[in-house]
Figure 1 (tube, protein in one colour):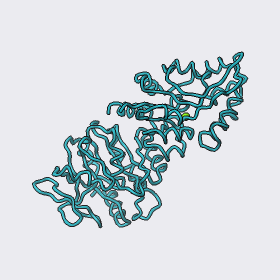
Figure 2: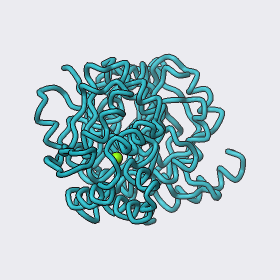
Figure 3: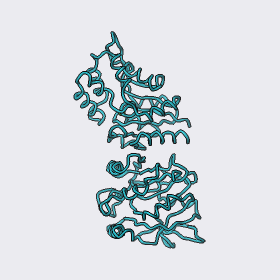
Figure 4: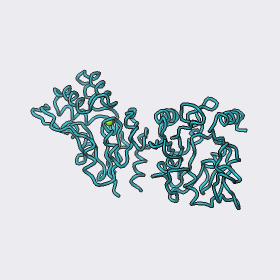
Length: 201
Length: 210
Ligand SMILES: [Mg+2]
C-alpha cells in the first residue's frame, strides 16, 4: 500500500519553534515562549494560544515575518527526505499560510502543505480565517499514513495515523505524545533512515 | 555487522524482582543493565529498545548513553508478552533480528561473537533459573522448547532471518518453534528475575564474569 508521510513543521522540520523566534525581533520573546511551551505541553488549547500568539505578532508586516520564517534553521536530513520523496510528503502545521509560504517554497513543499489561513490587507493580518485541526488532514487520504511530530498538538495526528513517529531531536517529546506514538526517535539521521526503510517495504 | 537489527525488550514490569522500576534500569555494580548491554552494541547502528512500563524513564537512561536508538512502544505491555514486543520491533528491520531481553547480562566476548554471526541460531545456557524454558537438543540442533525437560535453558537471545519470522502475542519462543530445528549457541549470561538472581549476577560481574 502506498505510504503518505505527514510532517509537523515546528521543531520537527525546523530546529526551533517558529513564532517564539519571530517574537525576538519585537522583544516579546519571553511572553511568546511561555505561551508556546504551555501549548506544546498541552496546558492550554492550541486554538486559544494560536490566536493570542498571532495577535502578538500582528503589527509586524506579513512579508517581514515570512522572510524571517524562510531563514529559520532546518533539520537538513529531513529536508533532504522531503525533497527526495516530494510526491508522498506533506507538511501539516497550525501556522499561517501567509507566513510560511516562502519557507514551503524553499523546501520544495509549496504544493504539499496543510496549514491555517489568514486574510491580509496592507501587509498586515486582518483575520484568521481558518485554524487547522491537524487530524482532519489524515481523513483526506485513503493511503497508509505515517505521521511525524513532537508536540501535544500532534497528538490526534499521530493517533489517527496508521503509524505515528514522535521526534525528539529538537526538543523533548510532549509526554502525551508518548502515549500514542508507535516509535520515538531522538536523532535526525536515524529518523531519516527509518523513514527510508518504511518506503522500501 | 550492520545486517542486523538488535531488539532489546524492556516493556515489562518484572515484578518478581520487587523494585519499582523496569528491570533494565536496575543497576548492577553501579550501572543499569540496559547500559551494560548497550555498551556491547556500539558498532550496531539499528538498535531498537521496546518500551512500555515507565517508558519515559527507560528512554531517558538509554538517551544518556546514545541518542540514536529507535524506541518501539508496546502500549499493551500489561496484557501481552515479550513476543508481542519483538513482533512490533521487527517491522522494517534489517536482514536479521537479534533479540535480547532487557533483564539479562551477557558475557562481553560472547556478544562480540554473536554480532559476527550470519546464520540463525537459538541462544542457550546451562540450566540455572527457577522457572526455565528448556530446549531439547538433537544432533547439535534445537528441536523443541519445553517446560519439562531439555538439555539447556533458553536465553531469549536469538538470531533469526526477519523475513521468516511470524508475529505472536505470547512468548518469543512461539516465534521460533515453527522454524525448528535450528543451530544453538551456548552463551554465558545471567538473567535477573528474582533477588537471588540479582545477587548471583552481581557477583559474576564483579568477579570479571567468572
Ligand atoms: Mg512541533
